[in-house]
Length: 310
Image (cartoon, rainbow, N blue to C red; front, top):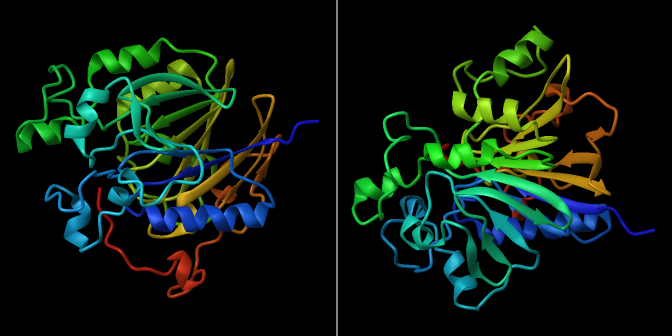
């Protein structure tokens, strides 16, 4: 019988490719098997040149780690597929709106669509919602303003995704609006403080309610979050929102599949199972919050203090 498929998802990388590779090594060791597929939910910052002044990462005095992979000095060990967030090398991505390879084992999925990856149907929508620009045409990112606008999705892209059905995983950058309210309704005394009710956008929410993916993975807000959307006549969509890649505990999320059916899932690097098929998926599925100053060993970067930045 074939081994279940192991899919790892990672939150906003923000240029930290070396760290993510180390984290995935640790996850493989903990699970005792290889990660088959890695999915990233935007704000990857795969800048080709180490001296690129547009990199947000430069504001943190971080090296442009992706340049080493693009130049062949390093190679990503596992197939990594990513969507665009609102902080990317949009000049490089503009000519790859339908997707393309940036380095060996590093593939940009594109602005919107669906792809079959390891037998799973993966839908995706890059960018965030900006009401002023959603109906404006996408222009080449030739000025700073145009670069910023490239990080917003457009109505034709949303409509393209809205037509999809039978989706195993949907990748979006910005959360769907209303999921915090849903979590509060389910548990008036949640196990941890909840973010603002107004987090997320209504367009992504309409998409998840139309496409009805089995799982949705989100980034952007740098917080771990777990909730299920379901109702009479509506199949369940389990949503996992990932932290940025400054802390592994909630920025690494994994799923094991067999014949397109999710069997189990977990957070972080321990390999511990947080959910199995048939169990409830909600805020109680998140790992316990680490106490102030606590974390994993320093080489995993869990205790690193980094400013949150969208």
